[in-house]
Image (cartoon, rainbow, N blue to C red):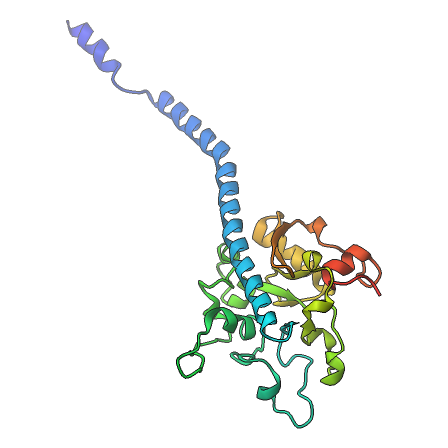
Length: 267
């Protein structure tokens, strides 16, 4: 009887070796599942941010329809100066100066999305800050950027960049602009809207041109681990682009690059 009790009690527990084997198996299973879980999280993050950027692109197109078919300048006053005899407030669009930066995401497009008019026709106030804190939790925040670079406290760097390369038109002659790329552009002149980039992931600048392509590819590595950036186009659709999808040829001479960066064929 004593031997039988001892035999039963020995079957109720696990030896140290058996426990280590079980732990090792669990560790192996977790290591096999982790990449898949991380990929699923990235896909979900990309879907959320893509939807947000699509709303920003739609707001930009709506702004254009209310402003003589012109796209906003990436920055105000940027390269634009009011014509002689006209004040800045009379010449520049509503909400161009919400923040001192004059950036599209601090002013005109931010205003298009988040500012509402009261019954007196006055815009509700919004505290636009130099460090971009007003962008937290809004459509303009890249949540993947916040997660991959939590030590960055300037929320402008957790946002997107507007393409300043879109071909300017003759408006810059009227405003004596030293930098025509920072003027408004007429949407109807940009013939390749489905292929012309409007906004794209960038963690260093909120205004980019072809010469800043490296900033975008660096952002792909930092935000998406070398995967794909999120880009919105002039027709409002959103795509994810790998580094090889972003044209690196001179847009002044290469057709595909010119249509992507400038919205027109080469000169």
